[in-house]
Each structure stands twice: as C-alpha cells, then as structure tokens.
Length: 487
Picture (tube, rainbow, N blue to C red):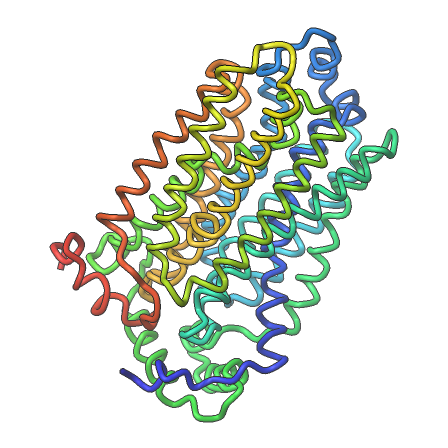
C-alpha cells in the first residue's frame, strides 16, 4: 500500500466548501430536467408556444397515451441535450487547456444566459435558443464537475464525494417539482418564473468558481507544479502530501507524452474504461429513468391523476430520489460499486414488470385507473426510482470519472457525457411517441434492457472501490479476466 492510501487527509471547512460549491453544477442540471417536464405540461406555456398540443390536450376524450405526442414540443426538451452533447467536447478541451475551475465558471455563465433568455422568451425561436444556452452550460458543467470532484476527493471518500454531483442533481429535480407546483397556479406567466429561477443555482456556481481551487492534477498537468502542490495541501488539509504529489507528478509526466488525447483513447489502457463509460451511459438511459422522471407528471396524468395530483406525485418521487442517493453515498465506498448495480437491476426489473402488467391489464386508452391501483403504481415507481438513485444514477457518473488514466481523462469523460446527452435526447425525443405506439408495453421494453445491464456488470465491470485513481491500469484492468487480454 502506498502512503496516499493510508488516507493522509483532514476534511476542513474549505475542503467541504469546494465539494459543495462544485456540486451546484449538478443542481443546475437537475433543476433543468425537473423544470422542462412540468413547464411543457402547463396550459399557459402550451397556449403561447404549442397551441396545437393545447388543443389536443383540452379535448375531453383524450387518448391517455398520445396527448403529448408532438415533435416540436419534444424538441423543446431535447434541444438542450443536443447542444450539451456538442458542448462537452469543447468543455473537454477547455478543462485540459485552462483548467477545471475556469471551465466550471464558463458553465455557470452560459446557464445564466439561458435562464434569462428562456424566462423572457417572446417566441419559439427565443425559447429554443435559450434551451441551447442552457445546454452549453449543462455540457460544460457535466463534463467538469464530476472530474473535479473525483480529482479533489481523498481516496477513501472518492465515491461519496463524486456522488455529491448526483445528489445535487436529485435535489435540483425535487426543487424544480416544487417550483412548478407553485408556479402552475400563477397565470399567465408562471412558466417564466419556473425557467427564470434556473438562474439561482447558476449564480451560486459562478460565485463558487471563485472560491474553489483548481485540482492539483489539472495545475500540475499545465506545468504549474508549485501551485499544484499548494492546492494539494489545501484540499487535503495537511502539509505532508509528498507521496500523493509524486503520484500525480508521475501521472502528469505520462500525460505530457500524449499529444492527441482523443486518438489515445484507442490504446489498451483506455479501451476498457471507454467501453464501460459509454455503455454505462447508454444503460443509464435505457433503465427508463428519464422517461419516468421527465414525464412523471404526464405519466401520472395518464393514469388519471388530475394536474395537481400529478405534480404532487412527482414531488413524492423526487423526495425518494434524494433520500436514496444518500444510501449510495453511505454504501459506495463500503460495499463497492458492483453490488449496488446488481442489487438495483433486480429491484428495477421487478418494479418495471409490475408497472407494465398493471397498466396493460387495467388502463384503457381513455379513462383512468382506479384509486387503489393508481396508488400501487405510484409505490412501484418509487421502488424503481429508489433503486436507480442508489446505483445506476450516481455510478454512471462516478465510474467513468475514476477509471481513465490522466492522459485521456477529460477526453474519455467527454465521450461519457456526450453519450449520456445523445441517449437522453433520443429517449426524450422518442419517449412520448413510443408511449403512444407501445403504450404500457414500453415498460417491458425497458425491462429487457435491465436484464442486459445485469449481465454486463457480472461479466465486464470490475470493482474499483479503494483503488488509487492513477493505478487503475495495473490493479484493475490487467487483473480482469476479460480486459487483461488487451494488454
């Protein structure tokens, strides 16, 4: 065991504030996920921008599964993810060239601009342009914040610190649900408040970006060795950081030899983390979580809860989401990554199959579920969200941020972020249409994927708990029955 593993660190107020401030990048993202589903169900918003959807929605005998099926309305949600996808590659370059901290600062500025433009939108063009700015902010934030947290965290708390990002995503979703609940009563400009409040987490992140230090890895990689050492002392809260400093120096020497990080992703050391990073993101979306989270309000309306009831039920799922993320913060560095993922596969599979079975047998295209069954569905959605929130949710961001060697870390993570955004947007764009054509069978579609994911974890995903971030290759990939064949 090297010295760095004997946890030579103290958690000081400054260290905590670095973690919390950076995690506000997650809150921005979560607020946005939560706000768009609610806003796109608000009548005032639909009347102004999507009158034809409003017409369809207000006809008495509406088809439960098809009332929101509109490509432009889906574009309102997914334009953000497409711009985040493109932005994450620019963010990767910026994070390597200028450092993690300035890139986090840029994220907050773009997001702030998006909030202002969206809240003031006069027409569809302003609205979509605002979404695109939001998207650039999300792309920069999601690329940089998980890396920042993983690089500043002491090894024995690395999982927990990184999951702060996901915790703040869930808090953002929850706050957004509460805000929507409030603003849906304010006519005709409630939706403007919903979109405008996105400025709050952006301002906190902007202020925070001047408080936090850049990560030692990033400073040393850019040739600022002394500053890097000072930063290391600051974030470890102790003066004796020599051993860890040397480990980072060695990793940076390696990284300096690499001129084209994106090309280097094709080398043996980066292939396993790249394959895993990309697949984790695809699987994270194919659990069906965003489908459930985005459209929870719509989903609950489909089951016949009226508008307020459905917002209320999303608040319930939001609370479950936040609460369960704490479970993973507590367990991830104790029982490890694999057990959490596998346990969740079982729990999610059971919930999805049960939801599908109830809806297929009981919900017609028009009409509603009876009270008891509706309550059971809400309960099942909660058990589903719960297991996702302590596994695939946080670990989809944690594992890619801790497994790449330094020389390809930002490039590799950019692939993870952009894959996440691509599949989030595909699902966002397709879900309402799939709900309309497949109806309740959509839950069986996602169940099939959950089985595939479980098998993937069993055969391809090694345990990375407690392994220093710069010794992954020797200690994880070269030991793994499948991946060692590459070396």
